[in-house]
Image 1 (cartoon, rainbow, N blue to C red):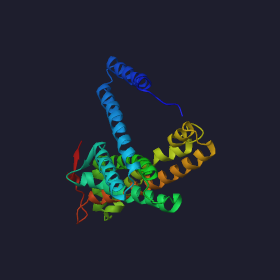
Image 2 (cartoon, helix red, strand yellow):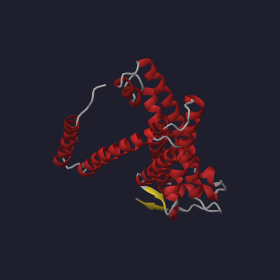
Image 3 (cartoon, rainbow, N blue to C red):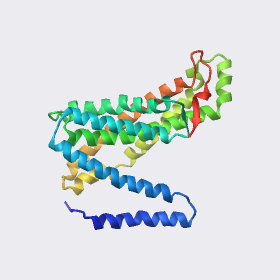
Image 4 (tube, rainbow, N blue to C red):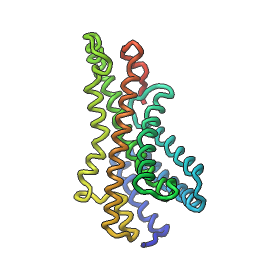
Length: 263
């Protein structure tokens, strides 16, 4: 494997800096966000590299669980931060976090125990990267779905209330919005699977090939990951939309948009 040095990384970083300068010149107003995101990427990946190095040298379920919980809590915060309208109070944080816990954690444990069969099953070499990929993609799907759901409910509140007055239940009144929200959350992973191997070479497969793994073995792992991500994203999106849509109504099935607030 080709070893990278800090000069190589600095050259790559100069491309991001060039993009930031172009955005300033064109008044796109993304330069600050771009530079902050690039800085966060470098710092966070460096820190996780050091943490994983320590975990690999000291494999214990408690430490692996603690890191997994930290990843989940951060992912929950990112889901909330990307929504234009989100639920007020702890609900804004809990819906996405709980949905990812139900989906990503369940699918990860299933893959580690049933499919990979490594002993111990929580070996960080497999558990943390797998959970990270599932959380990252599930986070995007849930954020998109929840943003679509709450935005549609706000924009079509008159339609929802009219349906309620005609005698429809709360779930019937927002059924079409729920379907559209779930569909929106699933589009990124569906596009990724449809284009895999034809338009793009997915990240895990590319990384294994660069590390010297046989291409056929890299393909097997990538197929596994894509299927797991699809399952995790689908389950998480379904859970989030179900919980979120119910939260839009009170116990008497009245629409309660005052439970939402703008970003």
